Length: 60
Image (cartoon, rainbow, N blue to C red):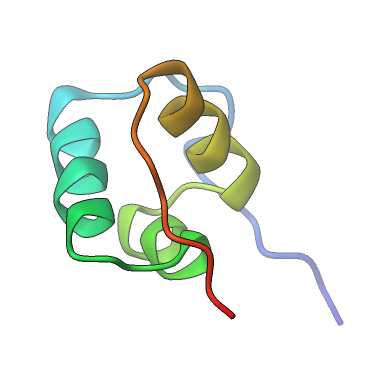
């Protein structure tokens, strides 16, 4: 299985991406779903959320 390639690798976050992250996290979406919607890796999304104190729900 090939790894997904992210075109935004090591690129700074834009304000619209941060807003979309806050909106999706507020709706209770999971990390994988948010990362895919924004077009970022799960690791990048998780790190950005942690730095900005945005809580992402854990899927069970």
